[in-house]
Length: 286
Image (cartoon, rainbow, N blue to C red; front, top):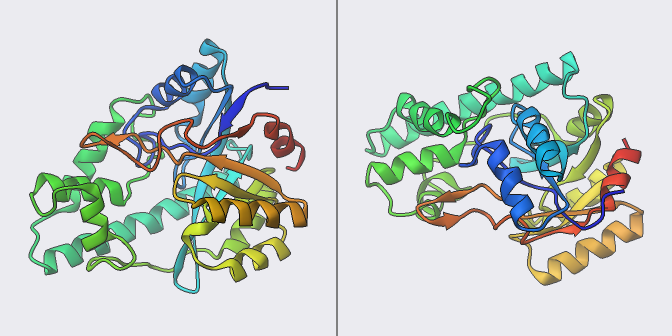
């Protein structure tokens, strides 16, 4: 039994974070956490490095991933904890999600060019490669995402901040936003189950779709990320009540992505936590 606090949502250079997996684990340890989850987008490339660092520092590392799905045209993210990341089918499915994400990146770049902003995918890849050098994954299984494109926009002088990049171009209401077909969250629940993992709805307060949350519960999702850096107190209370009503696991995390231009996204490691006893629930409910 791990005793203390756990931050169950963090990103590394394996996807769109700015810190290597080992550095994220060390930062969690320095923050006084007993456990930290590595939940990169559509990849588990950073898990092995994180586990090794966790053993060295004496902090529990939870292997996880954040899956990209779409329902009714909206991005919906599903967290998977403790899946068998060595499973061939699971890895093939993650590779497929990364391929879709790659196609989306290309579409965004095309739109930005149409808007008169001279950017290339090659430049985005270079930024991602610069960050990947900080980790040990050497780019294998790495995910490139919108934060990398946002950083390029800043370097080009098209925007001043990450927030402006998403507000003007990359967010759901942005001029360059695109959303190609992806798997439905119902399918993600099945994928996670088949991989021996535990499924959790990521930051439901960002979707404005509590009806969909209820549907996911009906389809067998096992937990709700109640505590999140972008959740308001009333949302945390509402989702905690919903989780208790249906006997679901309550999780929480900062959604830490590192620092860009001196600003932490979405929150600092340890800013949102749950009791580390939840790790036993996540393992038992696989």
